[in-house]
Image (cartoon, rainbow over all chains, first blue to last red; front, side, top):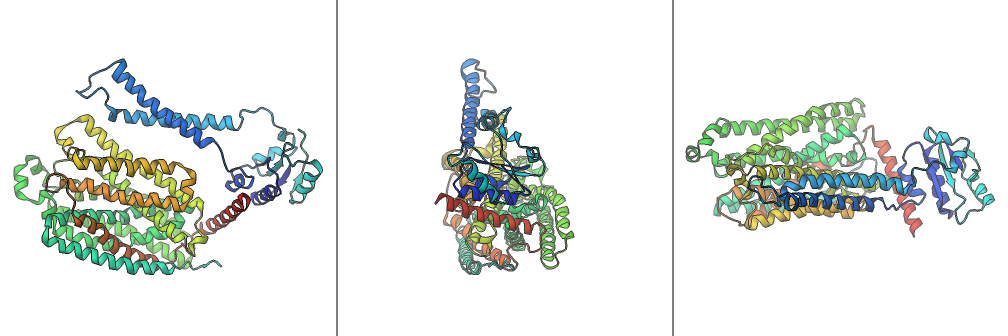
Length: 169
Length: 406
């Protein structure tokens, strides 16, 4: 694990690491860095499609919940309007779409990140608590196909980090 | 390398000449139409005028919005918005014929119509030509003053780099935004809603706030995408800016749909004869088909496309939605305005096509002239260095992704 002073160095190092062929790499920073996810090759996520499915199901569910109540379960004549008064169903359909899309976003994000996760080896690194304050970290994980301990340590020291540590898995 | 003066590319001058020719031919043809079918002429004139005046007026709202929020997206379109607001004097001149032709456009100017409708007799204290003109002068005066100061201070910022100017523009924009909503409400009620003087909808003003802001944003996106293909803007505007502009476009599409649907739902629920009268001709026959087209192409389709992140980040794709929205703005205006003109049922005339093209040509020529007269980026805005740096890094990381995927 390499520690850096500033986000620019982290992103540059991440790009070089990706170019060197390492794939199981990760960056840790106190705040989101848009370029970082691209630099470590993290370009695709299943989250948008999960949110879309959540929204579509919420919309259909919201509409047919009302349809079932107003037309099948308890038909009620309101102002002489037809039972299936779809214009009146739209606001609740819309709200249900948003509700289910938002829930899908939150729980989909947690599931894809494998959260909650009570233990992770990076917390064994002595300075790692600074990742929430003013330090920037780059990790090459041992599960990388190209991982070979001495070569990785040599490569990372060539990235010019402030500090370089070996994390016990 | 980068042109630090940000002079507009040659193509803008070419656009100005071409637009001026098209515009003058279009307006002359429309003017000739006045001799054959005066009523049709006024209908086409009003719709064509509202479409392009809406872009200039809406640009004022977006300009104040970006002063209030800050951010790279606002900085890269600021000069486009400013140039659009500097066309407001032209739109004031083009409004004069509407005042002169008010007798052919607005039924409440007709004493016989007022005499036949008791409800109108109560409204004449507001709906009379003198007060109508005074209100038009006031709303234009407010828009012109806001545009004047925002443009003047922005120009001073270019020349002097005085840091206090950014704050001045921000401080004016807050109350300016509030004034904007009031003035657009007055304009929408006067110029459009009073076509049917007995009908009223309290959300009508907000509907035009959303619609005109949407027109201005769609136009700004289309023009910025065009400018980004050329230097100097190719170095400045990055995918992240289009991403932000795309998000705002999605928000405004939804806001417009929300206001439109609110108006429809409330009137549909109430089901009162004097209110549903406005919707009946617009939801039956050919106008009903057009209403459906508006729902699909003005809302559903742009909404679905704009959900995608990749779509918003690609200017070539985003520009397609922006142009579609501009075309649908015209269709929607026609659907709102045209059924109030005499002649039952649906009919279109060649003037309905010539009017938006004629106004568009003249407006685009004036806009291009204004756009060329200043640098394409605010030279001394406090945000400029960070925006440029961000764009630079962004272009680098895009090159990197291309290399990596190749």
